[in-house]
Length: 387
Image (cartoon, rainbow, N blue to C red):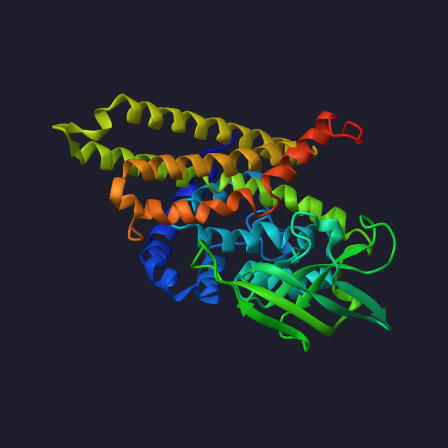
């Protein structure tokens, strides 16, 4: 265990918040196709939940990453993946590079209000022709005096219709694709930024996801995060955190699905006995719980290595791969034992089945995770073994 009593108290506080401020509204937000991000994030900011491992001087708590992981686990108590994903974008996908590499001026302008819940953030990486293949993105930011002028577009942008600013990855020069990119903070109310449409998704229905266009969008070069040309590297660092979020964020949700299914099958009588008494069912619940615990251990190991300053790319990729596949197995297996109720939208397990399919796609598809792991093992054709 990497959690102290302080970690557990944080988890209790977050779980209580989710149960009182989020879960009662899930059905309403699902029907609306969005949740009130500014209202919810402001409440979370007041509790200190949006800056747990962010610098104290910008409103964060300054705690180590294990506390952020504990927060991530507790967020899994939300009975729907949409809101947890949107929160993760705010805390662990759009802001880590800014917190680590941004200038004090930039962090005061964008990070501090994001931690306070006054700003909603989104991440602009994926494009129609460059999802998992980040190096191939086409959005450009050319220099013009003291400004960047941005042209292009981003796709599948979580929080996109409500965001105040975007952490944008764009090509800022010609040259090698891994060295010509920069991360830039782009206010979403800047002239030339267009939210083209809100996307209609299979799952994650309460999260607004948008397609964004940029037409001669002008922002000052001081909005660049860190060094020019280091954006690809910074984004790979952010992906480590995003992928751990994707894995750890499903732990409590999977346990909830297992326990809900146990309760349902224990009370459902079939051929004169509880459905749970069938060996195939109680063995399956035991097997799934064992796999969840194994994934939890992998996440904890990665988190400990991360705060020790180690490269956790391989471990984070393993956790993301296993987490994405396991949450699909859990939701599918549990849904089966709910019978006809498992096919009804009124059931939590049905929403989980729809929502969690994204875990094996977003933040790098399973196949990309396997490619990264193979590279670190030294078995990817044409690659050298990573140290």
